[in-house]
Image (cartoon, rainbow, N blue to C red; front, side):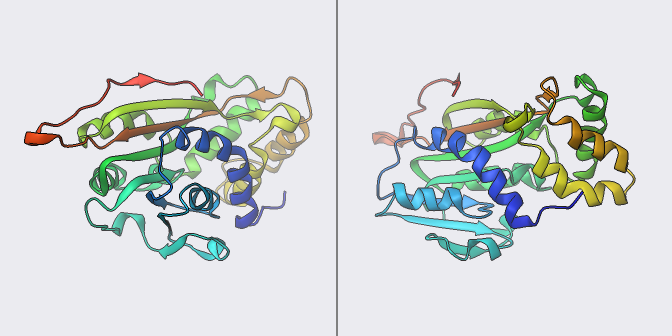
Length: 260
């Protein structure tokens, strides 16, 4: 199995998730002059989409590896997210997708990012929630997904469940969340082949799967019954309260669950 290059993998992730992401972001009511930062910008599809939506504002695209952001229309910043230190009240939107669950200091970054918001600004976090692989409908999927999870050393693929609580602890209000199942198999609906292709060399090197496992996985993707939901993508967002006259905090509405 030939591994995909990083650019192809990022493009595949973007194409399968951007519609879901902008379904959330477009519902926040960002103004054309909004100041936004995209943490872990990848190949820049979210940052560039925000530039289109906020032409009179400022969009900063942050990533440790900015080699895939050469053509971005956003302001590109090469930095470790854990080391960022923007001034309080810098942004109307702080966005992070598929990045915080991989950071050892993920909880601290959420708290810090909340402090970068202007009153009324939004913090949006999107990460995967990994479902128990032992419940998979096919043994080969269970083997490969268990191996994939073990490969993510230092990551927490269930952490996103804690994010609504973390946003509340950071003083945000109007906390909402929505989910999108990740499709494995289902013929043209498959979104996992690129991820497994990318991970295959490391999976084999560490002895987590066999060539036979990978060959079976690839060959069975065309079967109508070879369908699974190995992960659910969760998006969670909250707003920094406005401060009313007399320093009375406007707390906003209670937590609700919104389905996209």
